[in-house]
Length: 345
Length: 252
Image (cartoon, rainbow over all chains, first blue to last red; front, side, top):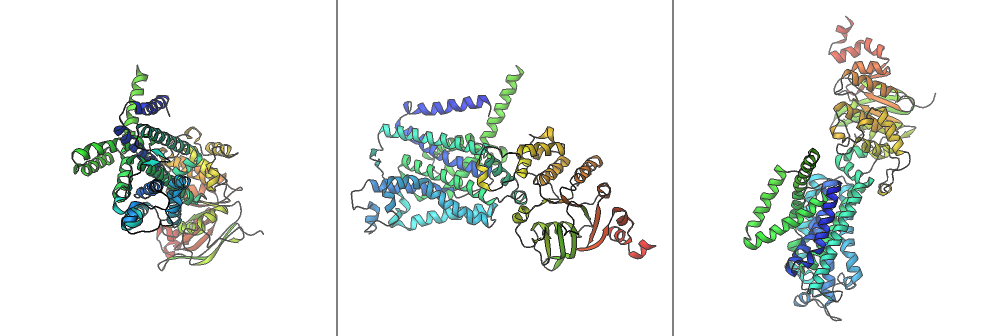
């Protein structure tokens, strides 16, 4: 990375860190939500940009992380022997066994990344081991997203159904609606985002990162050089899913809700679109695009709700046809031009 | 006499009833360079596919270093010391020349061993030596996809040699090269003899002559002739299958 780019990035992080003192709690909460989505986008850069695996089902892992935390938040607000209100309304008498471990905050916190990681690892191993890839793989991930959302809706009594899980007043005994809590969560999200970006930058620069690109470039060539490409693909898919889980948990905290509408087919495709717009080989591009696209979504859908999907579709087409390297490509070209001008003077 | 390094016995590969390889036998001694020629569709590439585990063997047997490898999986065969260069250059286009070679030169290919940041000992030296040998030392940090066609071919030969496999299968290494590049490739392949056993498939007779190796001619999935370049050149049957003349015409 060039020195000006590094300085620009440090300044951007510093600016993001002082934002809580400049913005009201509503705007701050909104930006924190979008930064959480940026963590998921980073995972897609690793998976799609670096390893060449397109997933149209990241919503599943986002949802697993979100629900893992939401279940704990739901339970922590209850007195002994009580069960969540929506279960009572559905006639459920005792807490289902798979809810019980989430009473423990440590289980929930570990589960946020471990559950999506395990599910993704097993799924990816089964599919990649049989050498299913490319479009077929993308379609299977999409089918999983559909199945997951359908399952959540159909099991209303234990999942909250279409409405999902909502109303979490406290986290570990802290009132979530105070300005202090909102600021704290914002900083935690910013730290998680920066941490994830640094981790991926390191992974990309390592020999493992080179091998991921090698698998993307020539899976068969790798096989005939004596490498088994499966573990590399499984690793990339698992890391992306864990980041999606973390993203889902943080998003749930900021939004105060997790529901099937956030995890199905349409949101999963939107996630891929953010990364396409940002440029799928660029970590910074993915973060910027996740922020910008979601800000635009917020503005456009509050003014003209029907317009958003058309606007997103149009944006996607423009990016794919006119700027295949996305926002990151534009950024790099501008930077290169400035450098040349600087050198000429 | 010691057993051959590679022995193919009465091999048959058929696709939906079409016998691409129809009872072919072949033996390569350790350290030998062998050229495999034959008209289009003779089954030259298919025999490489069969050796490396990529084509389903219908019957027959492939022995490598005294072990039956006929039914092993591709990377098990590669792990035993066989490496192949494909017809279309099989390089990794978005990686640099040096990265391509480093991946091929790595000895420990288990995935968790590659999580470390440090480069394994000896790897950098092997990469540098190969860069010199294939004449790409000044191109080491160039992205492989941007190389000229001939350079890509050399890079892939370099990768195959870097694996230090005992048996190298080179499928048309001079495809798309001019005469000067072809001559350099012949030098490179000749320098492999002894340490490696090499089977070269090529059409270019000038290249085959420069290799000065024993030639095996295939036709319609079978062995047609086996001998020195001069013998093959003088052979009426070989001329017949290449030029489409009948035996009678060739003899006349």
